[in-house]
Image (cartoon, rainbow, N blue to C red; front, side):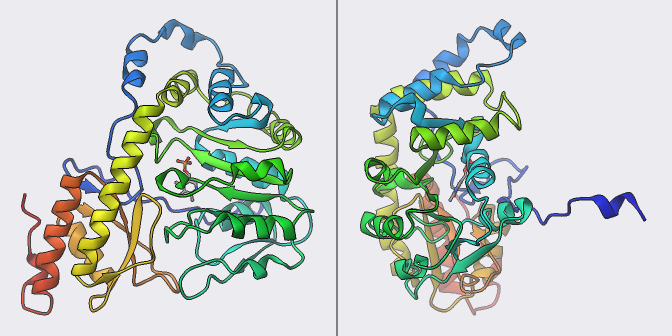
Length: 364
Ligand SMILES: *Cc1c(COP(=O)(O)O)cnc(C)c1O
């Protein structure tokens, strides 16, 4: 007998690399290349640091109220957490407590099966079709809950709200979570469906479209009853999840809608341009509505391109997993960053097969 026999053993989620090197082109974790709203830095400079002596508001009211106002819901329908990973983890713990397996797509955010394993929640994956679309009929089987991202990760594929509603209609007796981490880049939020479905939970984050991955802010919106249950669990784990600066600065970011729209608009414009350029280089991909493109090359294995990029200080994401091992997930950066990526890829693709191709340098 050893103390190790009593350890809860888990296989953790593997996050994208955060390189320690300076001056790399970082397109591997879907961060925003633009700074947070200007008011955020101004407010941070005027912060009353003495307040850090005190615990923060356990209800994160400033942030919750700002979000409620922005999304036209009651503050009682909003729950905030330490990134949407915290919100999702709490939601798994709270709502997926039946005996039946929860359902999610076979290709999706790779944290879902980690939480399911951690909390002992049985789960079953439903295969996306050849074009990486959800087949709503798959979700018409006995289950303990449903979760899917929309747009999906890492594919970028967006499902129309008809698909979301079909799944909700077929699953009135369980909680259906729509993870909208990327919805601000041209998707359509399921929030209006809240009026019809009290079993819907919509989860969003400040990490991608609001340029605040470093502050760790996520939130969800659902029926008052659902948010009540979520709070009961949260207050049984840790009362003070969101720190004071995150609450105050997050609320400030929500108030600057013009900046938010301009940043997401710029990323969408860059994405559309890069789609055209990647096609010219022999890449194909499902049509993305997120801040990344999931691209496969017609002739060159993704693993090789990934390595060549990395050696030239351009970081993208690659998974050695069934159905997706030949694709690279490329985050949309600034126009300049994308031009450097495209420039490298152009020379790499042209030189592929000829000797020394992997020694091409990214240049400036
Ligand atoms: C990035 C991401 C999240 C979590 O992001 P946080 O930084 O924890 O808010 C959740 N779901 C999906 C699908 C994501 O891609």
